[in-house]
Structures are given as structure tokens and as C-alpha cells.
Image (cartoon, rainbow, N blue to C red; front, side):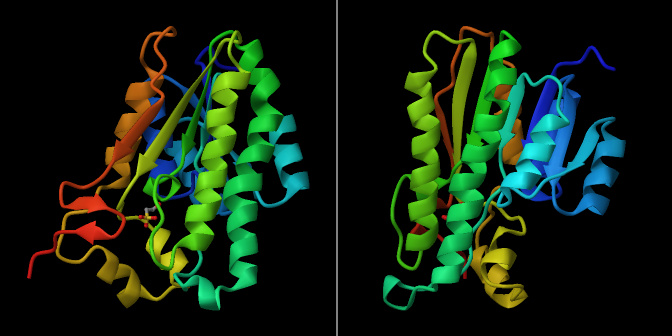
Length: 245
Ligand code: 8X3
């Protein structure tokens, strides 16, 4: 048992999720970390005195078991998700699209639905959803991901109205270029392609994004930070960046 408020972070085994778990623990939360890679998850949980639980957001049974293992929840960070491929619509891969829809859209829906009663019950709930600048604009080759991120954002933004009158805040985080495993996953493990995304500029780090989550989560209860868009100084939009050399 702990008297710290509970924060649940999905996709917490690496990148923005892991950095967010660390930042929230530093702010006094007991963090429940969910992800598929248990070894990594348990290392981080031990480091921050949190709790690691297996979670595959694309699997309804896994989400159900995850939610059942959580007794209280004051803050939920919907971070699990990602992109697969960068093909134009003309050659879109349906399996990649299906996965992106499952992970980003239905995954966020399942976890949010499951934890909503506990967030309300806490009397001071907060849902942070990690969308992307891909939830704000289209870009070439990105339709599978931008479509899924727009849909995920709509779940989140719809709740902002549906939960009026309930003690739950909603914050959407929309990062641009952040150097994590994101591009490595998108390009199926091709390190050269992943590195090229960040070449010639200084991308955001996972800690930069986590810092924004921690800030939003520690404002007074009556203050709702609706949307934070973060990009590197050298990035104006998904398709427009300044690169050295
Ligand atoms: C990641 C940002 O621009 O690669 O969500 O879609 S982008």
C-alpha cells in the first residue's frame, strides 16, 4: 500500500512512456507501468518504486486484466501506440494500418474506458493522451498514422465535453520530432532510415516531453491544460524542418 496518488502510464518500457514514468515518480506519484516488454518495465519500476504490469493495448483481454489489477487511479497517461511504415496511400499496407488503428485508437479507447470509473472515483482524475503533430496535420506517406492519431485525438477531445461536471481533467500532448524508438519501429528496425529522420537537427528528447506531462499534471485541480504542442526549434511542421549540412 502507498499513500502516493497513482499514475498509470501505458507504453512505459521505453521512450516517452519510460521518461514520463520517471518524471511522475519524481513528482510524488506511485506509477503503474504497463507494456509488453516486462524485463525493461520491471527495471524501471524498481528504479522508481513503481509497479510493472503486463499490457498489450491491442488485446482486449490483456487490457481487462491490466485494469482489474489497478485499485486506484488519479492520472492516466495514454502513451502506447506508434507508426508502421511511411508508404503513400497508393501502396498502403492494410496490416500496418490495422495495427496502427488497434494500437493508437482502440488501445487508447480500451484503457480509457477501463480506468474511467477509477479516475472519477479518485475525485481529482486526469487523462493525458500522447497524440502527435500527426493528429493536427497530414503529411505525405503518413495517412495510416495521421488517420489513427486524428481518431485517437477525437476520443480524447470528445471526452473533454462528455466529462464536464465530473472531476476529471484532460490534457492532449502533441509532440513533433522526438528521438526515441519511434522511427526504428516505423521502419521495421532499419537503423539508417531511423537515424536519417533526426539528421542535421536537434530533436526533442523523451525527457523534454515527460517534463511537459509532469507540468500539466501538477497544476492546481481547477486548471485544465487542454493541448500542448511541442516541436524542436528547427521543425515548423511535419514536412518542414531546417537541417544543417
Ligand atoms: C511522431 C511525429 O511527425 O513523425 O508522432 O508523425 S511525426
